[in-house]
Image (tube, rainbow, N blue to C red):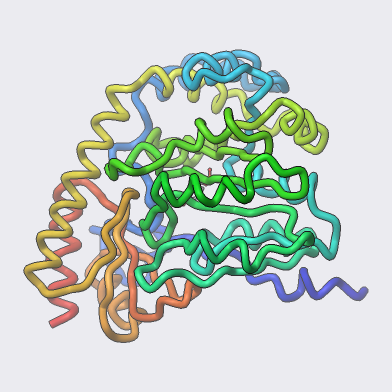
Amino acid sequence: MKVSEYITKLIPYVPGKPIEETQRQYGINEVYKLASNENPLGPSPLALEAIKKNLHLLNLYPDGSCFHLKQKFAEHYKFDADQIIFGNGSDEICDFLVKVYCEPGDKILTSHRAFDTYRLSAQSARCDTTLVPQTADLKFDLEKFKDHWTPKHKLIFLTNPNNPTGTYNTKSEMDDFLSFFGNRDDVIVIIDEAYFEFVRAKDYPDSHEYVRKFSNVLSLRTMSKVYGLAGLRLGALFAHAEITGLINRVRKPFNINSLMQAAAVAALDDQDFVQKTQNLTWQGLDYFYAEFKKMGINYVPSQGNFLLFDTKQDSLKIYEGLLKKGIILRPVRNYDLPTYLRMSVGLEHENQKAIAAIKEVLK
Ligand SMILES: *Cc1c(COP(=O)(O)O)cnc(C)c1O
């Protein structure tokens, strides 16, 4: 049967290489994965406790309305419960948005080197993606979005800070952008803040303020990064109630499992764990910056829990060399960065091992 080219030409997302596969392939035991921006401290301990307490309820369907979780998020983030909607990871929310707002033939607009999930969601729904060129320092060029937007572009995806670059847009850049795109009824602006909790820049804007101010601005957060719950999957969307009402129509009733619901309620209360993760991340980044400076390696200052650096040669060779030493980093050729690697911040000894291995392989 003939299948749409949108599907046959779809290149699936390539996740970071798993630890076990690397152990098998290279015959080594000691393997460190700094490839997927996961939390090296594990899951929040309070979340783990909540999961254990709820294990005996696995025979029951989860609460389709996520009542307690929604109440918790509403209280924590100061929104009404009907302004919040959950997805099985924020990637599922991207699918919802394309389903609700795009007909085949419509398009989405984002930046070159933006996180790839948006394009994959669009393409699965037979929609094209327009990529706005980045600035020379690998930032989203928000000024240029106006030149590339057409009425066919129903959704604009911004990632702040962005993965894989770690760069961010300032409050004044975002204010300017929204003075043009905000409060319109012909386009939706989604601001993906998966790394919100890791940002140290003083001029970084909180998208929740924009959601309150503009009817067409949506904010996306995740439990996968600072809360350490990537394996259970939860993304949260904050938006005006008319918008969450539309999304609820395409959401399957049991998309958030019961363990995740219990874990997320507990994790939001675990702000000690958030602080611990932040401190570990910031110390790790500062360590990487200092080591790369000593080695004369160019890197992109990061507001995330990862760092992009330039090997100045085919990065796949360096990637392979590091794998043999038990260090898994992430090549970013698919983002047109053929000489760069992305490295997540790990535990202190993992960071040291990674730096030592990079030194040897680059020698
Ligand atoms: C990791 C990440 C997410 C989180 O995705 P989930 O589906 O919630 O795990 C979202 N956006 C960006 C840019 C990310 O890097």
